[in-house]
Length: 203
Image (cartoon, rainbow, N blue to C red; front, side, top):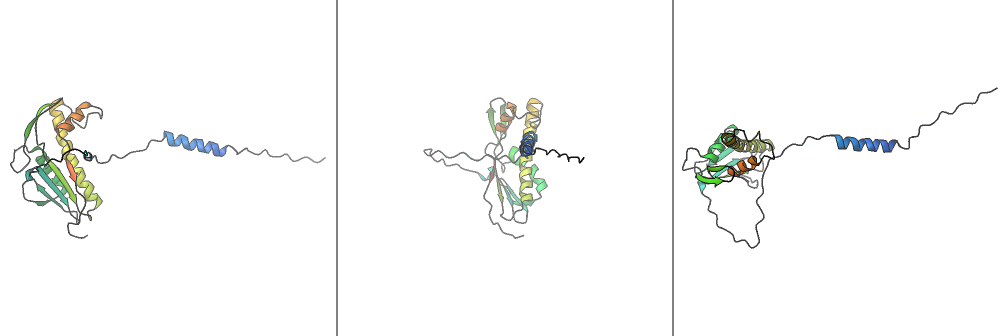
């Protein structure tokens, strides 16, 4: 008697694609992605059509010019002082000195006393401005390093002010803490970036 060969049952693969699709969606939904924080810069508001133009007088003592050339060399003009070349590691300290003008230097921004809601009275240089200019040939690494030093100067100033007022640094405060907004109003980050130009010097 001859035995009949048994047929091997086939696996139903019609739903394999559906399962794979569901797994893909599951991993996309549950996977966390690291997001790098960028540099915070606030663009100026759009001018109102019917708003009259005001003549704003900018004094030389109120402007801190930071120029990065195509060779990644850094030249600064701190207020009414003469321009000079510096190393990027010196930039944070010079920025702090300019923004605070603790010595009340007549060549640096004028210090005025103001009242801030939630903070009280503080002596600040409300008209100071940092003008960042770079050459089209400036390397990205040099540009970011300069940005970091400028931001670090403001962070230190805000940390010291918050510690003196509330006993906690600005960095340690939660993002939703209203005191962070108050500190930013007292010490706003005033950095203006000009369009890159060819200032000379080729790499």
